[in-house]
Structure formats: C-alpha cells, structure tokens
Image (cartoon, rainbow, N blue to C red):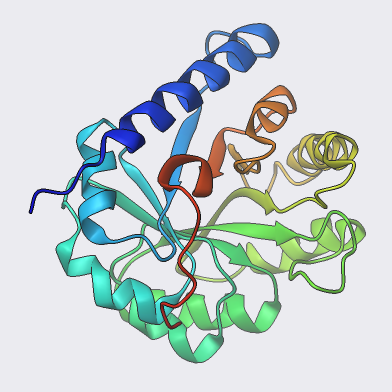
Length: 234
C-alpha cells in the first residue's frame, strides 16, 4: 500500500506561507531562515517525503530513536540534535550530526569537545538557554550565558554558533523578545571569542512570533507531521 503523505504537503504550504508573511513583515531581505522538520516519533518514509518537498534540515530529540532511523533518511538532509543529551550518549551521534543545539553544561561541552577531537572534526553547537527559568526544562540561566560561552569557547573541537531556547508557552512573546535581547547583547560582548550567527527558537505554536524576534531556525514537528505517537521508545 502506498502511503498518502498529502497532508504534509498542505501543512508545509501553510507553514511556509505564515513564515513568509512574518519574515516579510519583520525581517530584512538579507536575513536567513531555515525551517527544521522535527522528526520525533515520525516514520522515515514521512520524513523523506518532507525532504522531497525541499526541507533539508531535520531535528532529532532522542538518541536511540535517531540511531534506529538515520540509515533510512535521505542523505541530502542535514541532521541536527536538539533534545536533552546525556554525556554517555554523545559518542553515538558525534559523527553523524552537523550541530548539537542543546549544550547546557560544561560537562556536556567537555564531552562533545573530547569526542569531536577524537573524531578529527569541529562540531557546531548552540548553547541552550532556559529563558523562562523553568524547573522542567534544561538550559543555562540567562545571566550565566556570557560566562558559559567564554568557557566553552576555549574547548577544542567545538564552534559556538549561537543560542537555542524553548520559551514558556504562556507569554512566549515576552520571552522571545528577551531571548533576542540576550542574543544581541552576548553576541556583542563576546565577539572577540565567538562569532554567533544562529538563534534557534520557535515551534509549531509560536514560530511566526519567533521569526519576528530574530530566530533563523524554527523547529516544527506537530505542525508539519501531525500529532505525535508517543509509543515509540527513547
């Protein structure tokens, strides 16, 4: 039986339309924006259909699930890791992802650095910021971001590209604005040690607002692939 993925076509049309409207309204023509397809619990066949529509950036949340699916993905797609990452699992992804967006501790950064050097590569990372100070979420505190970047920038095998966040769902507009301010401030303060060009924020419910506040990677899962099937194991 041939799978019908026409719903992905329509969802992506809507996403591109909304994102395009927000970009035209709030951003400069020279700015860049990438739509990331977040693939948690999504079958490789559906992911590959999205890739065939021109989405070339995939976001993986879970190491074990990623390892079970990665060989089935279209090779033209770039894969970045966006989920909470334990240090003992870095070794499983270090050679196959282009960026780790969720670096939120010195210990994790040290592990990524060591394994990247061992693999003879430099890996791009984003520093995850807990902009809302929520106990349920990972990320460094906003006020610690500058010092964190200063320390991590000294590690071999790592190139800091910018910041990532998941703002609180309530009042996300306020927190997205704070994140933009933090990104601009830290970029200027730390320009002697890092050159940051990536702000990753915005998901299905708030990607248009995130574009307004400077995001250049929006991470969309449910809005693209539909409701999740959480029976898939981590």
